[in-house]
Length: 95
Figure (cartoon, rainbow, N blue to C red):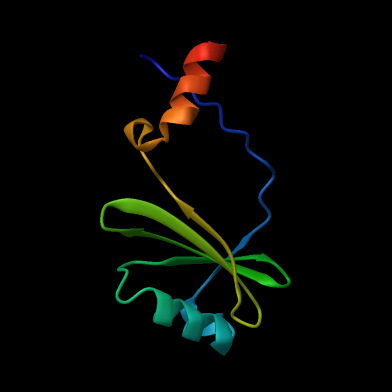
């Protein structure tokens, strides 16, 4: 089965940051959640949110924190084989 997935890009106005420029609550929350994730790319999404992108256990991960260190969003890359059966069934029926 061949599955095509369409990704929609939005205009991304994020600003690249060094870890030293992050609010302390963001650094604290991230370090508690991810012990030694390797190289982390930080971006300021908007005036209230910070995104970390990194690879952990071979998976691309992205997490977004608010200024106060509250986790807002997590994204983890998965393969087509890791999709739930209901998703692949739906795609197969609709193609």
